[in-house]
Length: 413
Image (cartoon, rainbow, N blue to C red; front, top):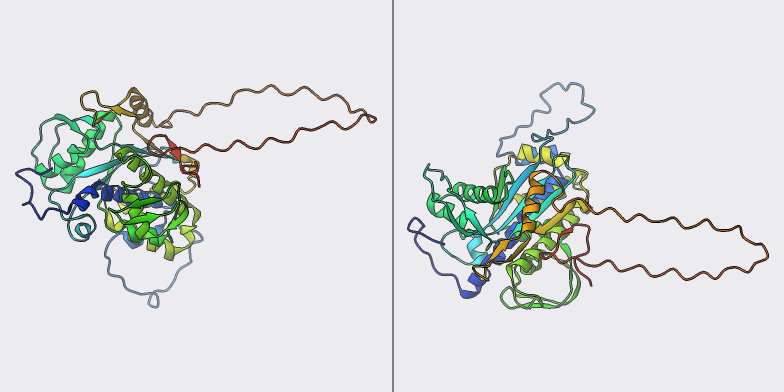
């Protein structure tokens, strides 16, 4: 979306680049969420010291008389201890420099992907909710960085970011308008924002040595160049990037909902990869990952706060990292748009109240204990024992269509 305030129109992107614009943005979200999850599961004081800024360092070790060494390093403080944290994660299709080389040179700036990340006050849950970009919502009046305001209107969710950018001409105005739109439509207080472009994703995947995925059907997408057989694969940065962008030849519908689901699956697999590595004791590996992940992140959260939050979540489990998409239905006014259902109201109310977003799990049905066995007769024949039945296969969850956790099965090879 452009306006009279936008920069002069640049060279139009090739058709295949335009078709892949939203896929590139989705891949940016994988970078953002992965970096946030790394801060969540692998916090450390050394990381904060490394990423705080460009500091001129001197070595005075030989000049200072050393005092007694502390027995333990102080724990980093969680500045929001005891409070839930809600972060809006946005994917921006900024098209300059390396981003233009990846996705094509296009004027303006849009946000085609949004995920609300909720961290519970007790630091036992991390929940991620995908917001479809074509959700019909109320966009409130937004204040720009120059003090001007925009008029309230109805529109697609991703219009909010474009409205902020076109009128404020900066990322602060764009992000703030998107945040205000989330608050107005959900009632969830959003305190922080993370905005990413899509450069650096390959380096992030390579920094953890690749990521495992299960490809149920062969995929051949001429737009991205992805040509991969069915089965289990460990994707390097280049192939993971192609997989994140793929829309055609996937054997599934090419909707934004299913693409968001594949992004959720990739993020979950990457989170599992991060959790499986002891990054706290491998400074080189941790620094390599964070160096790649933070290159494409713009955030309102300070490194110090991220470090404290990460330390407080150091015991997070895969079962407590949950993903879902806002419950939706085709819009009555336009079948090519979506509107949120009453189930979405329940979801947002749970998050606002810092309750599990999908509600409390159902308690197992009570079972009646079997009757006590009669004393065995020494002269009786041994009873015939039926073979133990085979375990029931665990059903797979469909990312995008169903809620799942990082511990769930989301594909079958």
